[in-house]
Length: 342
Image (tube, rainbow, N blue to C red; front, side, top):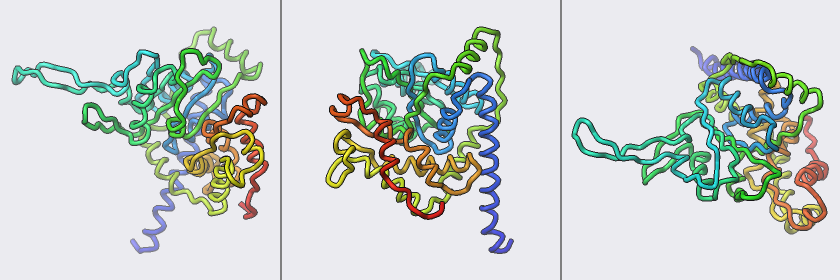
């Protein structure tokens, strides 16, 4: 094989993987529609999170199929799924696992054996994560960031692919423990599920009150997701696009030279993880839509799920009923898109 052929092969492989990703997403969307009505934008954001290798927070009132969506995705991908119901009495060991004493039949002696917790899955659903105290919430941090857990001084690796999806109910605050900003920042997206259109809601009632035996075909696998995650990072992002994502992030922060509405209503702005998530998520979104480079529109489309949990409003915003959505909308209007033809 010549040097020219060697250089061309990876590009050819990447194109084939990109086509598999795009067609795989279409198949996954078709499979999920067997049980999920509407919510196509939500499904896209969840899939972007998967192929970008990120964790996401799902926010919505009860009954909007948050748990069903994540469980169905795990079934469609044939991945090991674990649901952890977060409650005030949940302990860190209930999440990570613990050492237990067992008799060794060979020696007749007792020894400590590690019993893995539900975190040892491919997709972990942390249901109502804000109902458990911060000590237990923090049990997820190492797993989310390092894909490993440490118990009694010993470290255990988690099998790839690994994702955490956490849910929160935005209207029920009594008896909850708000997630610290440092933990919120580790979620790539905050995905908001809203009420369906009337016709879609009628279809939900029709389906759920009739016999249902959905069978999922496995369009993609965990190995495919690992390949896609590597491919996403090889997608080029032009310098103007990166500068735009960084500008949106920096302009969200109050301080000297800040935009007037930011100074008035924002207590803390987004960290650099926001720019990283917009670019990485933008790469995944570009591939889903059949493009091989990130556009400004990709960044703008992901600005809300990336920034809505990273921008902390002050008392003035709360008293004037200004929402994070309002802030991000104004930020997108205020920060100019560079002129580069992308």
